[in-house]
Image (cartoon, rainbow, N blue to C red; front, side, top):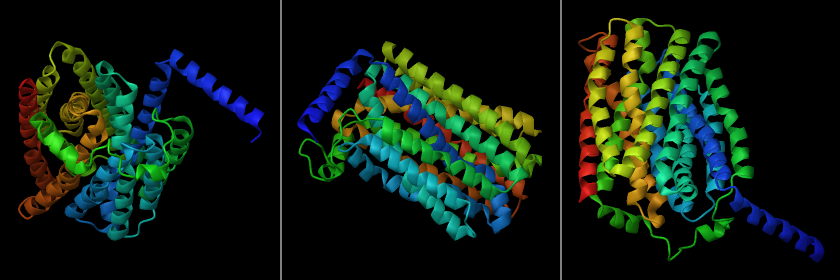
Length: 436
């Protein structure tokens, strides 16, 4: 490059760096907007299989245990195990690049789900979705922690959490409509393709505050960055962190366990059509889940300024209230009442998001922010996402020897609801340990 041209380019870059601080709120808000979109697609691609489970079961001849494996363990297998190395990379390399690559992978694998001809192929495609989605969580949380001050983090994470039920709404409403009019394979195609566009948006418009670190440099041992072993040693000295992890595991155990059988529950028990089921389930999950995430984030910001433990105590109470709500929903006399009552555990499943992750970020040091989230995602993914649906499927298959398929599924899900009491206990204990 000609020296004069090079000088002009550097002048422009320097001018841009001087202008950027003048609008401190615009760029973080843009980033949270884009992360909102990609997290929405994350849960769309993750959850669409739940509304398609019953037609897939009939088409491919699967059992409830295989549905649990297909919806839970297949996804969690690498989603959880890759979270740690990807988080370690996110602590050292360009986080926007990690996020863009991740969404491109999981979107392509979602499309491949629609090409599966048997259980094994679908299982492996879902493994691929999990591999891609492993890259977005830790990097996104770490990026938000750098862009937002501590007093705004719970609110920012609450906004991010709102994308989860909205993505689920699109998955249920759109998936139900498509499968009733076309085919379950078309639903996978339409769910996966938009992610490619968002990946390009992230790659070209989101910039990591750390700057462009060479990938080769990211794999070198940095004495200023701690290893997984060192991160575990540091976090082990903070019992409140492990209570938060345990609580999150149990919340996801219940949430993914019931979500994997939403379609089967309403089709078997209430004979609801897929189109009707899709939009009703989508509205219920979208509204109650988004409200839960929003109020959870607001509670984290508002009550956290009064006392750091109050958001966690409130979350514990929400978990307890969700148990009777879920059990009543399972045995409701009609589908509409069941859908209305299911809003209670759905609200609880997203309310915890802001208070829980905000507390984790407060407990973690600058060097362990992404790793603290990754350790949480590893354990919550393996036990909550991976085992929760399989647990329900195995119980349902076991109870079906004495009960009808619908009654067996109801009993399995009723037992699942009790785990939210356990989750509430850990939120309460986390609050107590924060006071120590």
